[in-house]
Image (tube, rainbow, N blue to C red; front, side, top):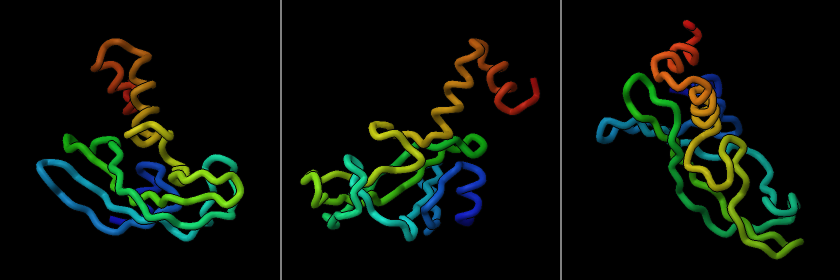
Length: 127
């Protein structure tokens, strides 16, 4: 497994692959933030100080029949400019979502057709 696979298969950018765990029939990929500048998610200021991190899991597209998850330590920062303490913004997930962007796009594409067999075929490019 590599950082390149996570980018090409799931669109995960700016994070480095650490390891993969297989638990209870699930595949869990652990990544850590790459070298990027921390910014306030409210005002986009780069004048921030680190205030710990929170470990979160995001649901991704399944690999075969196995559910897949992305485990990410998300840095909390305190902004000097606006005074807010928040988590940094993630490029691959919405603020209140527990799913990566690829899974959300797939669900929306599947909603085009009511028949599950047809929506799966459309997603795989065979219809």
